[in-house]
Amino acid sequence: MRQWHALAEALLELERELRLLGLWAAQPPSPAALASQQPFCVDTLAFEGWLQWIFIPRMAQIIDSAGVVPGGCNIQPMGEEAFAHLGERRTALLQILGRIDRAAGQLAQ
Image (cartoon, one colour):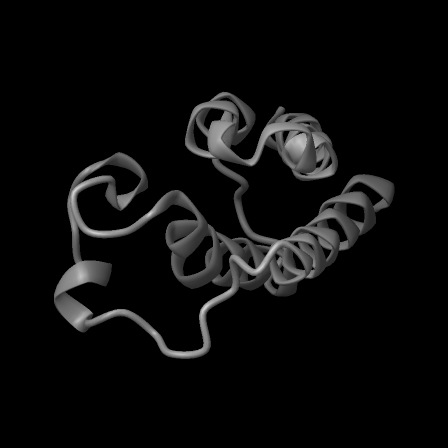
């Protein structure tokens, strides 16, 4: 139960941090962009868009239904690359992504 709470809290923190950094979009991307078959929708969305429109809603749905958490989210390494342009401003964001990876990994076991 504690891991579910940790994951839910980290997702809320992720949204707050994306908003704080100005990386939260007001308008959703096109349905075609959301339908990408590439990992992280790299061909149609920026990483923050994938987090906002795909990852956070999907993980929230899994939490709400106590569903199966995909093993090995490993979103922190992608965040390190995708948010490199933020420099030091990305530190808290990467820490949150790491917490999500760890919580999801514990729930996937």
